[in-house]
Length: 331
Image 1 (spheres, rainbow, N blue to C red):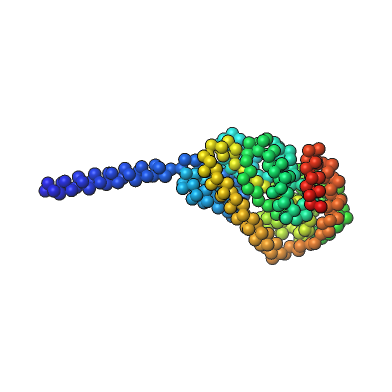
Image 2 (spheres, rainbow, N blue to C red):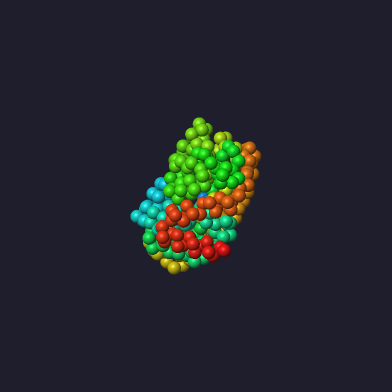
């Protein structure tokens, strides 16, 4: 009887000790730092897949000391709202592009018509002196640290008549985003650009209020423009990139070894996204063709030559200086 009671108390004490140790272990496993990573892409978009890759790498290679919380679909707000949140310290990371020019004017060069003729040209610029100059101004003026870059699909022109030369644009009512540089460029090319919210484009095309629109293949597909547009005219008029950024203040709070974990994960995320991007561009073209859209080869050189004077005129002195440096390095 005594032995039974003694063993019972011993087992209970052992269970309590085990629970205490387990609780201590769980407490030690709690992350020391959390990175809130908000962006505008959907769960299935390659940007979100890349963000999830980053999350996995950081959490694994920091031994759980850093937790990464990914919020797609503008769950933390619009692009501009998340940037503001990072600056206020209530968010930590996002994916952003030429919107940064609101603070860093040179970021406008991230999306300029006919600045680049190929993805390779753009990559050399991003990873060369011009890209460093843009990045430095972003860091200095925004408090954001770019840690990776993703290529955006070239912007293409859709319409219900084939467009091969700038002269084919005459009288074409074309929706463009409310970006003065884009408006002036298409005016110089002979079209009739109309700034309009993206949410209004499908209905306006359907009703004939506008004749055409321009966007990357990913948006042409997701917006189902194949239902109201017949041709994808391969103008490639804007090749652009976006940055994955982290708040500089948040990054500086991390110990050196965890900063290295973040940067290593960012490098691997960038390579992963680039692979997904190439595959996705091929898939998008085939998907749109399968839905009945016809792809038209365009005299891109003629478009570029006619557009560049308007582009130069629209840029500020500092922007134009960097623009010319990039152009010279390509020649």
